[in-house]
Every structure is written in C-alpha cells, then in structure tokens.
Length: 326
Image 1 (cartoon, one colour):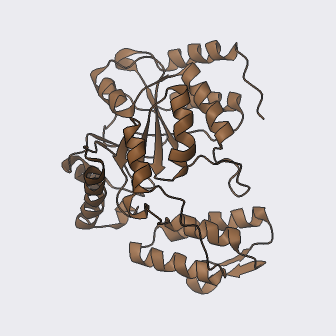
Image 2: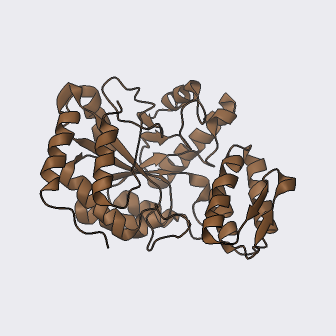
Image 3: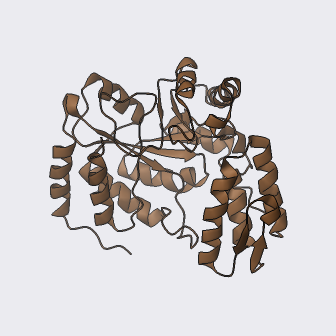
C-alpha cells in the first residue's frame, strides 16, 4: 500500500498550484483523463488505476485542486470566473468498471466526472483494443506469427513480452478502416487460438442510466470509436451524430460534450471535424493533447492530461508540471 502523503505536503502543493493556476481571467483548467479503474493490478498494464490508487488519487486531487463538473468549468473558463487550481475529471469509452468501481469512489469524495461513451460497444460489445489485449493475454503459444497480417512475429513467453507485443500491435491496428479493423482483430484472436473473450467489459444501458441518474455528465465519443482523421466529412459526421443521438434517446437528456477518439490533433482528428462537432450542437470538446486550458483555448479542442504515477507525491508533482504547459 502506498504510504499516505504528509499532511504538510498538501498546503505546499496548493500554494504552488495557486501560483501556476490563479483564479479569474488568468486561470488554467486541468482536465484529467481516465479509462478504467481495476479491482486489482493488471500485470500487463501496471500503471492502470486500481481501486486503491484511484481512491488515493481522488483524495489528493480534492485536497489540492478545486474539482468542478466539466460543463461548469468550461463555462467559467470562458467567463473568466474559474477558481484557482481548477480541475475536472473525465473517463473515456464506457467501461463497466467506471460504474461498478469508480463511481462509488467519486461519490465518497464528493467529486463529479464526465463519461464519454462509444455507444456501439455497450451491452456486451468489446472494443477492438480489448480484443487484441485479451487475445494476447489468453494466448498459450510461446510465439505468435502475424507476419502475413502485416503485424510481425511476437514473443509471448512472459507477461512482459505480452505487454510489449500488445504495445506494438495496437498502434498498427487502430488506424485501419473500421471494417478492416474489426476483421483484423478477429483474425488476431483466431491466430492466438482464443475461442472465448470477455463480453462484460463495457457498460450496459442500465449501468449508463444509473451513472446519469447519479448526476454524472455523459458525453459523446462517436459510435464505433474510429480515427476521425481517416474518415471523410460525411463518415465523420455520421459517427459523431450516431453516438450523440443514441445517448440522447437513451438518457432523455441533451449531450453537451464530446471527446475525440484517440484524440491527438492532426493525427486522430482534423480541424474540420472540430467544426462538425460544433455544427452538431455540442457545447465543447476535448482532445488528448497534453496541457491545460486557458481562456484563449479553442473550446472545441481542449487539452487533457493524467499522470499515471502510482506514488502520490510523484502524481502531484506531475500535475503541477502540467500546469506549466499552457
């Protein structure tokens, strides 16, 4: 267990954060990204938040920053009325553990988060990356030859080797056209000799509605999580609109915010797609460009960042370092 941070550290971190992110027109908004919160550490992804580390991170965040709901934070950022040390919490994709494990921790700390949902994968679906991850995790072969798929040969003889293989395969898979991507990950699973993969990683409609009923913000994240930069304008608009419409019909509420899949400006989405998001009636959108938002930031391309340090002191220091990135 990570030892608790000294009580003396919190005032010091608050002082430094106040200097870097003052209140008012010169404010800087830190928007944090999460994807999953796990019950126990995953040896393939040791930096992924667990219940223990997420609880500690939320306690630290609340003690140092003024954590606001993202819609409120964006309005106050534009108005020049943000408090000092402003921050907001976001989750991407729609994993079931967001409801089962993260939500109770957020509620215990009195914190609000925005959850960006890729709607195609709810109710028993599985994102393409998880098909790759779980296929490699469950593969019993010492080596996996994907050369004829253009994905190389991979040693799977240890947990570290499997993590390395996943890290090499996923970047090559994610930029494939949508249908080709689904076919490719299915062939990877078949080649790995895996016949059964988990079908409960993503939220159900009932869990999504419970998240909304708990007062959390639900945002759009497209329907099938494509790389928008690889789509033409009609395809991008259809993907973004389909996710928004499904969420609004399911929740009976307006969807105000959007997160670009993968989220790197220029590589994963283009300026014209930010205009599509604006035209579809969203109020704002977030990327995964590292940094903090200021009053001068494009409200449809707001940066986000999360340090993955398990040590709480290192976590706080990296958040402070990020405040200098504006």
